[in-house]
Amino acid sequence: MREDAFPPGTMSSPKASAVEVILVGCIIAVSAFLLGLLAERVFNSPQMHVIRPLLASIAVFAIFTFALKYRTGTYLLGEIGFVYMALALAYTLLPAIKFLMVNFDFPSSFDGWHFAELSPQPGELGTHFWRHALFIFGVAAGFLAVRIRPLPIRTLNDEPACQPGRVIAILLAILACCVGVVTLLSAPVATYLAHYTRFDHLSAPLRRLVDFCLVFKDGGYFVLLALLFSQYRRYRRLIFMVVPIVCVYEVAYSKGTRIVVFTFLLAVMAFYHYRVSAISLKKGLVVLLVLATLFLGIEIVRGSDFYLGDAQYRLFEQKQVGVSEFDSVYCTGFHLYFERAQKTLPSRNWQMFFYELIAVIPLFDHTEHHPQYWYARNYFPNAIVPPTTMGVIADSAIWGGEMDLFIRSLLNGMLFAFLTRWFLRRREKWWALTIYIYLYATCIVVLKYSVFFQIAPLIRTLLPPLLLAGILIRWQKASAPIHSVRPAQDKADEL
Image (cartoon, rainbow, N blue to C red):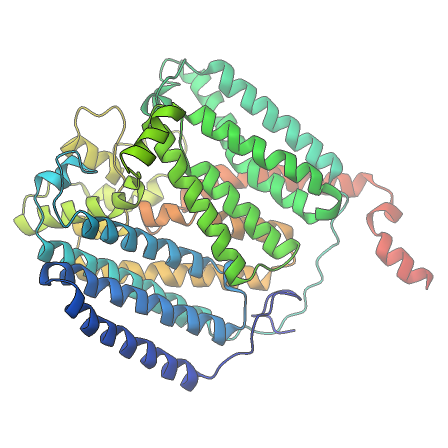
């Protein structure tokens, strides 16, 4: 089997030639252009400022999807590049639909008060949507340029994994202790924003203990999933127990934070895809739609202070569907590009450019040079915690503008492609699969923060529990009888 293919059962289609991909790409581009001409007969001129970059973004995504699927012959749900591109399109498409629905008449309470105060005109909104289209194009070009190149053929002879039952039990005990410590040391919390300050009353040593427990809890979820899915048939009942418990606990504990649950469920889907049965594109889109519905549902309930009656009234009577999450990347980027055009951007220090590398350093103040905290200090000085997100597009507004954005998007796509190629060379190793799925499931934070943002959580959050599990597995292999470690090989020898 080719090294750039997925394990047996995950191949979806034969590879197309470069000429076929180019031909289909041209057909998609022409179709988008004709749809644009047709839309001019249906929509007015202000609306077309937004619709044109939307059609361009959708066309780029469609060409990317076809090229990736038919040049690699893989199921797309296992590709971090495809999932990331789908998220980028969602954070472009949904705000545009919302703007068109309100016909650019933004109330004062519209998501992000700075955005509403700017009174943006349709032409200005359309210009920023073209920046989103440029970002999507850059990510697609960077990813395809690296990903579709053939990989060298290698034969992997990974050591067979031991029965991980004892390691799973130890890991579950550690996770239970971490949850207990975090719960006991937390101050009473009643609101979503107060969740971020629940440990501010602790002394420095206790705060370090809490940080340690949070690291092992958040990273331990992924390691636990890796071990459970390594023998799915044996542990599937435990999986069906652990997954809902973790989701309910994280939503209740954080008073409505969704990112942990979202990434956790994405990881469950990815582990199932690689360890159990490949998920087709149609089934995957259904799963992603369910996750998006859950994502928005939590936002509606959280906005009603978890009173289900108020949530039902807002949803069915007032027809209010909270999608401020999908506005967050657009509004912040638009605001900073507006400030850039007016030459009124606040001063920023050079350390902020290298924040992702600084964030790796332990026991260091990770807020002073954080772009998100810089934004909050200058525009939301009274906020307890930064109330907005940033993102790759917003970062480019701070530094180099559209050219900076294109370079960042190319680098973004190339890094994800190199990650995919690194994983494919080691796909039989459980730790490589765990690292890949962790970055796969958390790729949304790159869209919301910065290109290199995943470096810090990978090192500080995933690697400690991953190393601990690796040590425990080696210890179990060393202490187990030979026949219990390699039963398949023993049977082969007997034959």
